[in-house]
Image 1 (cartoon, rainbow, N blue to C red):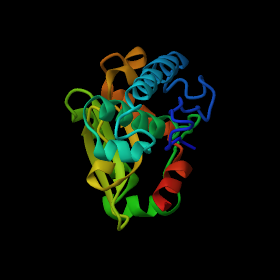
Image 2: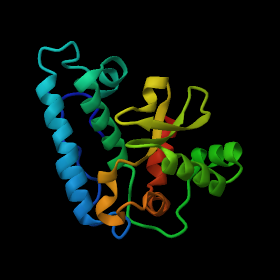
Image 3: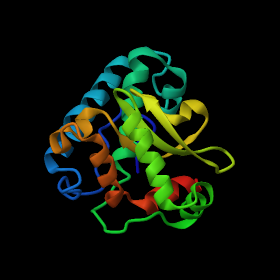
Length: 202
């Protein structure tokens, strides 16, 4: 469960629903330590410093991301994105595939899970610079794959974010160096599809 509202006026570092080494060899314990424990912690600290006295004090992350700009937006966006990112994984599993209603929607819209993966990886590989590739849903349940630069999130487009791959270099450089496409391809084995389907059903 990710924190969406401040607790006693502040946001906290999201807890990992798995051990730091549980995603190896796809994502190393070292990468988790830096990415979650240092990068994300910095965004949390920055936002908690910026919010007091601002119009966004006491607001949810979603509200802040949809209405703010500048430093508040950048840090809130990174927290929201990373909270969804870190809570969508589980231990590696061979032939890992979508489940439930989401599986049906992917099959109907993209023709197959393989076709969906190909388009998703292409969007992630071709996003220039830093950012995120997302699977999101509109109010009718239709799925969209979007490229979001920097700290952006599909909620600013009126979409519900479901699944994301982080293509900022700090997410993969220790494990993959500049091989972003290999990193993206390997992530499928650790996606917690039950958690993604739950997001879709909401």
